[in-house]
Image 1 (spheres, rainbow, N blue to C red):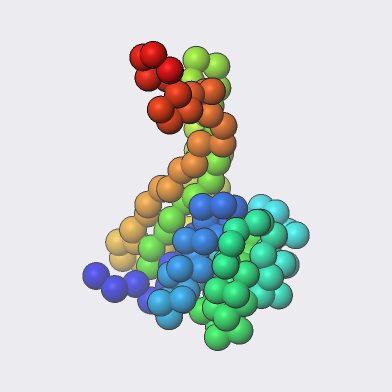
Image 2 (cartoon, rainbow, N blue to C red; image 1 turned 135 degrees about the vertical axis):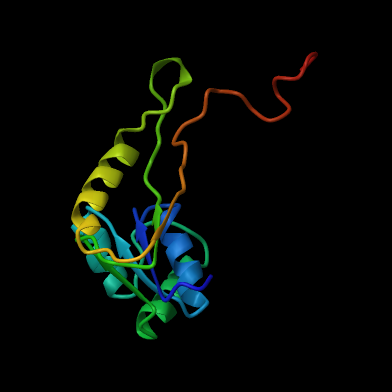
Length: 140
């Protein structure tokens, strides 16, 4: 299956690199974020996060017309929701950002959609529980 337009909802540390990767493969990508500053920065071909080598990929993708950003949901062939999923008490994921993005996006796009769009979720855990790889092994 081939997608002509991909919408990435959430342009942080997961969403922006993912959007840039799709755009670098000459796919039309529209990123959506609630952060107006992030949207404006991306549309200038710059980045608002610290990520090695990402700035040049975003700049090229924007200049070539494969990547743009907006605060308003858009119609696309595929949707990727990439918003934070921090932990609540007892190490349970807080799904409020995912639920909010899905509700807002689905309500706005549902009436305009034709066909069978694909929606995928990409999550990120923002903090650790204090464990360190190899540091919790017996005898360490």
